[in-house]
Image (cartoon, rainbow, N blue to C red; front, side, top):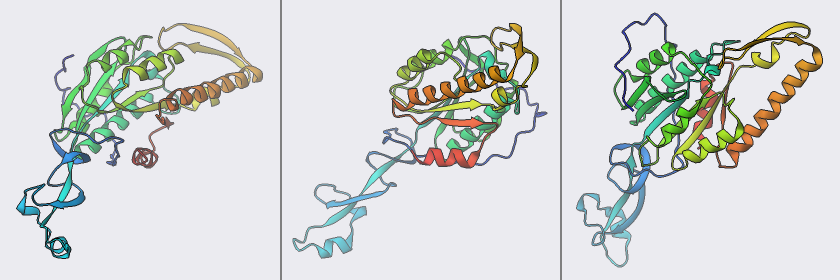
Length: 296
């Protein structure tokens, strides 16, 4: 997998004002880079852990005089801290044809804003951020290697706004799992997840070593903006096929019930693996996302 060059410096598509978010990890990283997350092992700039005898941890710079004077055994005590580490945060974006849906909102613009927000947030946290776009394969035109570079959020937004979702295959999502770092990373899988549920199971299994946040991108217009009566033309965004359908109240209600039932099954699929999905519905709610990420 190789990254494409930076997109043209054409900022005709204005980027929205971004709100950086904090997030919490469910594991202690052991990355060598210093960052904001409580890590494994000992470090100088982390959270206070405990007092230990100087002979066990010979670092005179951390002598705690108060703890030493209180010790009836007259041992010299030093402070021990946990290490603070950085991680790699990765946005893996589904670019199959259905992600090109435009209803109440333009789906790819929502995804671009979301990923730019994640990129800015990772950089502010001292983490590296990577973007990987996939359809049938990994897309070189929607790839940003792990970086802390200032302005990465602008590049991420531009690449996604220029990306054209295409095809009916999501095989590239599975291919990404083998190309991520061996060490655990924070991975956001961003998709409408309209793939068959067995494929979702397979996808979650492939990312087993990483902390995965499934992000389900939805548009209420797909179900709620259908007419009660009339001929409507349906177009499969992945295959391009079109067909006429006579819409009527019973069919519209059945359509809505089927969509709701599938979301329940999709959430159940994620929760079986201890993953709570975040639903982006009709646009990004940054406050709700922040609350979701801090819940861990």
